[in-house]
Length: 206
Ligand code: URA
Image (cartoon, rainbow, N blue to C red; front, top):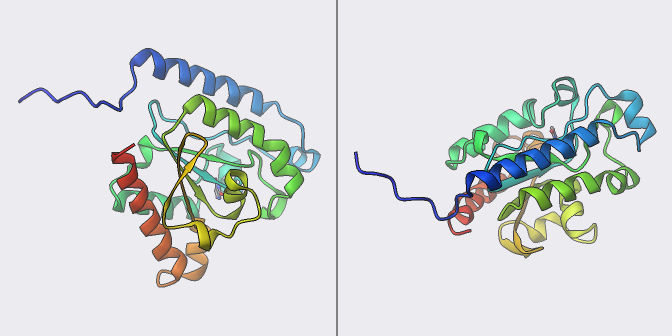
């Protein structure tokens, strides 16, 4: 067997280890957060996110649902299962992709996060992005779009292309829950699939 050529985008072991340690520290601090009284009273866990060592793509969702809250990991319920399937389809394994939410705690009864909650919580995600330093970020749904680009833009106007954003690349797309809600033949499913394919292609050149 001929030796594999080194991947020019791969990080050295020391850098990956240092980032993992910093991400663990952020997660530890987030677990002690009591900034949102309503959320603290209802949460089972704080869902800090999945950060596989050396991940170059970060997917950003809205907030944990009931299964995520119970098990402490993002996107493991119905929306997560769809996400995993679509990632597989475009050749991106979930095991190599970082996944986090704007809000680290589950809103009671799965209500939408309030603007005050996302404002209080965004520091955790901002720090995770700074440490992970992914060349590509994909936002899933309106809350994550608001975190990245502010609340004055429409998802349908921004999706389907690659944006330059804070020194990295950004792709905006629908939340998997929207794709489930509109069904397999609905526009959000097709858009989400296309945008994840665009993410896979973009990662090759990032
Ligand atoms: N929806 C999200 O936005 N995040 C999760 O982790 C699960 C469902």
